[in-house]
View 1 (tube, helix red, strand yellow):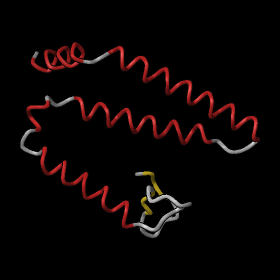
View 2 (spheres, rainbow, N blue to C red; view 1 turned 135 degrees about the horizontal axis):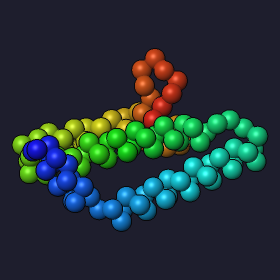
View 3 (cartoon, one colour; view 1 turned 180 degrees about the vertical axis):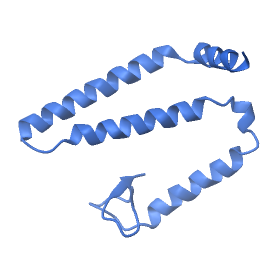
Length: 113
């Protein structure tokens, strides 16, 4: 019973206007990337973008589930952790003239900061 109350509270607090527009923007972006892939005769970049969208959606849900007052004890460590990650970006070697890529150890792949 309590879990049902928590879920209904979460659903009521959800800003559905933002969710609908975010989904619409993701769909338009995927359509544009797929069309670009067709025109260029290239790879499947839309599938990689879809993976990032799913990962971001999971992170969004994980960030919005707990009430913000429950996180008051960990807000400063999270803040300083984010500052540390931002500082690490500027300590990396520039890639194509930009410092916004974090190179993973022993890997050729990199992620934007």
